Length: 190
Image (cartoon, rainbow, N blue to C red; front, side):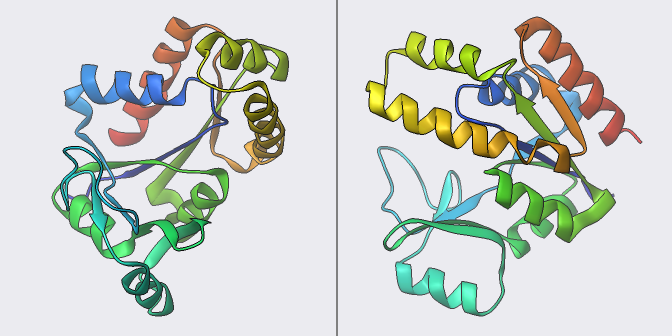
């Protein structure tokens, strides 16, 4: 039986990674597996080809774009691409994995459009932009101007929330965990 596809997207600081990691680490019965994306950057640290990413040259990436092999892709900087191969998603799905995507809003919308009802799109939203500002400041990892850029991008991303199947407002982490567990459990077991 083919696995299902679960797409998560959210502004930076919304708690999406915390929620996805909770599902992946604490609920093996859901048979979740991250989609393995491609990138044109070099491996970092202990990253291995075919595990964390498929590492391609910029020219290899462009060739796959031209051949229509990607569900979604983005050139983040000149010659720095990230994307999701259709063939990889099908391979993981045919192995019975419920494939989890952690992508930007446009990528999420493209994946959902491609797969329709076989995919569930979930938007994780902060309770407010001010709460998001507080969280980003509390992280103490970014300069003030970077935080302002992230907040501007977050407002833009939040304008796409109504195009997702489900919106989870993360104003209480334990409640948000219960909500995503309920949503994902019902979807994969339907």
